Image (tube, rainbow, N blue to C red; front, side, top):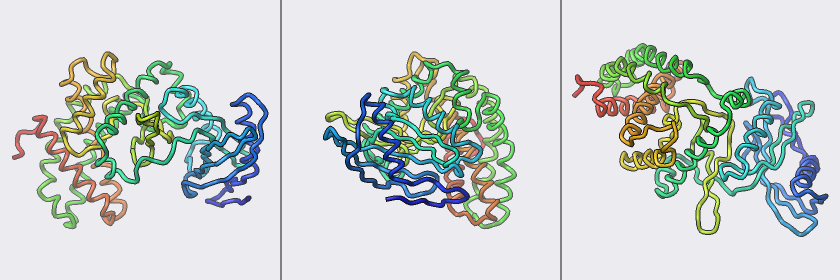
Length: 369
């Protein structure tokens, strides 16, 4: 079976014989012997788009049967990143995380710009955990706690590396902002620009819920300037920017115990540790239980305050600024679509409501009843 898929400007190689040939070399190196793949079956598990992800079922000449995941990168979806850079960062991540039960073992890579082949071959950990964020909110609490424990392990693992070297190595995939000044500028810009956007949206008269929310939301913004220093003074960590469990998490098994793995590292985060915690539960008590578990795992490091209550406070500061960030960027999107993006409007409504509620809880506003 051999075919090419034209996704946009370039042809992404999708040649099973070539895949088989490259994988034979990689597995021979991995097992330190010459081997042959006597049977090869391919199952696509992600449709062409940003990349093609497939599961390969292999029969080896020594009667072993294994499965391998291949991820084929579409260079046109890498924006300003070259395929060579993507592969280089992936290899660096593989060296750091190999054997740490954080991400799949990276077996090997192919980087061929002439043929447009940028491939990752990695351990098969099984299917994604769930299909949507709302499903994860109903997941067993032990799985959610395990998810947060893995986040802490990632942060602590990268802390063992040289920060300057990581900055240089991860630069191609490192999401903005990348410095403490960048975070400060983003926070200040979100606070400064949000009011005009909200006023513009409210003036359309299309969103009646905004009439009562505009003033109290704008009232909380100035007090938020006072917490920026506290957030950016915290130690920064490397982590996974997109911690959406519905896309990037699988639960594997070791005996009866679940093990949690991140499977997709297309964007790398550098910022405040407590800002990198995913909000994956709706119930406040459960959410704080997740923060407490992170504090327990990272306790003794510079990433969390020594006192648990201070950790909760800093987490809430980060969460409040995340709501404001969402309001600004979603309002930009809503305005650009001429107020037709109903999904963005609903997310703005929830973010504003959550921001007001949290600011009131933190006693940052006194004039809103």
